[in-house]
Length: 152
Image (tube, rainbow, N blue to C red; front, side):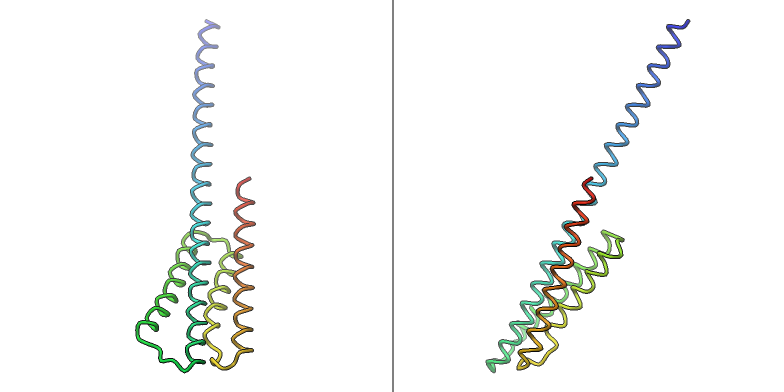
């Protein structure tokens, strides 16, 4: 009788151990998937913000040279802005970390401001570009730190 009880307890303990291991595996896989989704969303936003700033700089350069802006160039600039907005939306759907989202919004705002100074205000254009690059670096650094921390 004792042997049967020990066998049943061993079987139950084995089943519990297997269930716990399976649960831990699922949790780890979910954490890895979420971390990768955040990395992808952040990289998308960083790239989109860079593209948007490039289009804003090109607008300033063209205006300084007195070149006419074509509808295609304007459409590409608007598409870059839309790409940045879409990337911010993707990030917002991926994380609820308030600090990361605050930095992401700051990046979008600073990148948008690059196009606001008059084209002949080189100091203003340079200052807005500096702020945008600082916001870019701050967001990139925070995401990298968050991702490294979440590996543990």
